[in-house]
Image 1: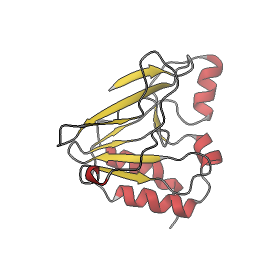
Image 2: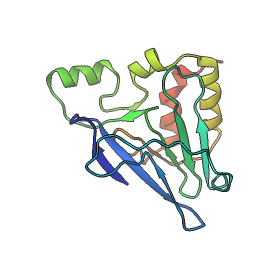
Image 3: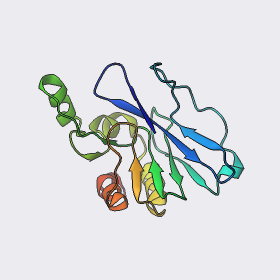
Length: 165
């Protein structure tokens, strides 16, 4: 994994590389070191990767085309902007924004995600329930610390209040 700056803020980005059984590499959230804008992941999901890496598009979102990835061999869930896990010291306006946005020293979706990105809670709930039916022990987030302990339960608690039915 590699981390990069994002617009000189406390929000770091994480690039994750998964080794496939074939020896190939799958890169999530690729970026070149020293370049601020990530390269787009535009290719269709290859069928030969499906056994090793689950690609689940998250339905019910207004703006973002979010997908989550589950690397089955390592039981690792990989997210982009679905959740944050920031553990940073901040002050002033930055600290106030993190608290208001519900992303200060906690794992879960931001307030902005809930208010702006979430469009169809029924469709979103179906995607999250499908994901909760999978087994994972770790969660790698794009912004913040990797969730290493009790990851499935922590994920379920964080997203439970957004689920319908």
